[in-house]
Image (cartoon, rainbow, N blue to C red; front, side, top):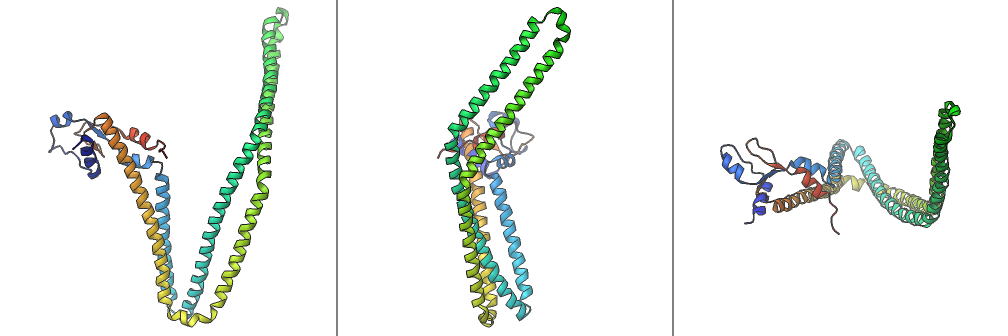
Length: 317
């Protein structure tokens, strides 16, 4: 078995050398490294997304528990059950609408980003030319003032030397004011660019916004009609209320499971990336054993930062 395979076996299972099991000779004869696994995991590019996923998972679980508690409380009476049915239907429809609107908003943002890129590209040549001309204008003026300072230092007669500091300070103030003026004009030029881009995007942004609002209004009207049409079916629905609650919870359970699977997959990806990086580095440097924790009786090289740098490298697509 290759050394790096042995290494991964120890890394995956987390075996630690104990003082009673290995003497100093064994420790010194092997090339040993250690990785602070928790630090490496936290530094992984996907760790923030994993934390967000775990937060979402906890929120979904809390929401399910709240929904279950609410359902049990409302099942205490027929009127409460009737209200629960209406509330559940409305809540479901509202949640469905929110999801659809979010998807449409994301699509709209994607379209606007593409249009923004095109607008910036269209304006870039003109903007760069104006910026270059502006920089050249002030570069020459500031250069002339600095040249005037140098001449003043060199050519001022001795009898007028007492006034030289005042003259130099005045020239410095002119240079400072010119630099400030240049900055203001550069800012104005940048604002002009942003105004141009905004003007290009405004009609499309308004069109996309109207499309979303019109869809939302039509959907709300359809939802209201759907709820109104079910008003005469409450008795039958009340008889089937426990099953309806079960189904509602099943939908939430499905969502919880999906989020948990996403989190698990992302955690496995992070672990896999770190493990692969450990294997590669160990193979390159000839480490025979890699521990996940420091041991006081083992002298090991800390490769945590090297592994972090490795997993942060962009992956080839």
